[in-house]
Image 1 (cartoon, rainbow, N blue to C red):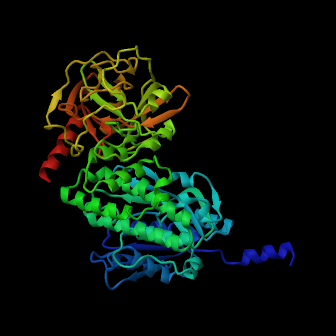
Image 2 (image 1 turned 120 degrees about the horizontal axis):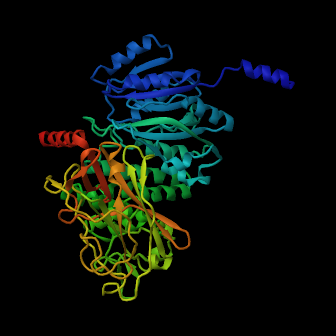
Image 3 (image 1 turned 180 degrees about the vertical axis):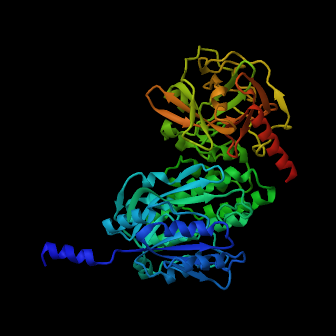
Length: 605
């Protein structure tokens, strides 16, 4: 057959189509938007299979009425609620007739062109799976955070999952398109019943079958995060320890699936991902739970980590998640939660004290001598540097005081030269208020406080204050402050450390005091700002860090600062769940009233 007749045959061939399986339970408020986003994908979507998991709020009737005017929509109503997401997805998958399938939850949406982008990638690369960028959209703020963005930075084709172990970090099933025949040929299905984190196991089953995978940088899924919803999604409801039990079980099954398929490197990557992502996320929240939860969580975690072997711990041994895991595994009871919270933060912070064993080896503490020796070989750009911070609002200027700690000699060895201060808007990460870089100067001999090098101790708060609180909740009128302007930095002279610092500050600690441009922060109205610092070293290397919020009495009070433009600006520094310093700003009368209304709502509820 010649080329011309081949072309004619291809144009007569029906185009490949996509089925979108939409699942929902008692979500009448959102399911229509989800289904319509699937139908709006155009000719790429051949069918939409909506599976109602025995809702009681009229969702099924709504879907049935919608299907009357849309022939591509098929509605399936389950007779009994399954308790999870896996069973209704399997029900939908069984009903699919299209060569490709995607999955969509009833409270999320597909952005325009998502199905076409994935279909084109899969067809063009002859891939069984195609994946694209998912964004988490916080509601009602609208803030969007990309999920696993580095995986989807560029168009790519992965001939075998083992070529890109990072794939195990994207455990979502909803930002991907699958060849239907591939799933059926390998018997790949979701865990049935109430099985939280079912997509973790499903993704492992997919990777175990060694598909060819196409990756695209297009936005293909919008994950709506409604933290204020009356009923949180299964994955967001982490209040009970059963949620952690389910997550560890899902990660355990994912490891076993991949190991059983001979994918040893991917299985190891699953365990590494657990340490770097899952463990760190829950440790950051551990201080918010009661004692019974912490004990149960600690026991579950130690049992899970006890299954790890020497090779699991030997890979990237200085990574924060591995250090956190080793501390948990070494202690029979919960301990050092404030310090673990800081190490689990992003970026990680290893706060004092910096203990050593008798032979000089860096260890977690004298009481728990877990080795920190791998930190000596970790690049400075990845070190868990600790910076203490306190913010002092004042009539004549708002000042930020910083203290950079030595870390077993690594900081002095790298030679810190400047620190740059950035304030990132919480709801719009593209909005940044930057201060000029502050030079670091050498320390005159003998100016350091007396004490043993590298040990040092700084008090850590037992946990962040609840959101919206500050000490007693009183609003103080800010008193005088030093004139604005950045000052030179250098290793601390005695008494120059931030007021909240306790114990001895040993040699090799660097301090700074800089002015905060409160007018620039207030210009955008009521908002929350996260502090980010960039430490630059003499060889040109830099390290981006956040700062540990000192919590001594009076440091996290709400203050009213006079403003020529707004009349008054309410300023409240506070500690985030991970212990980092952040700042709430509310300018003018409207800002004051918004704070008062929020406080009243908290008192009522």
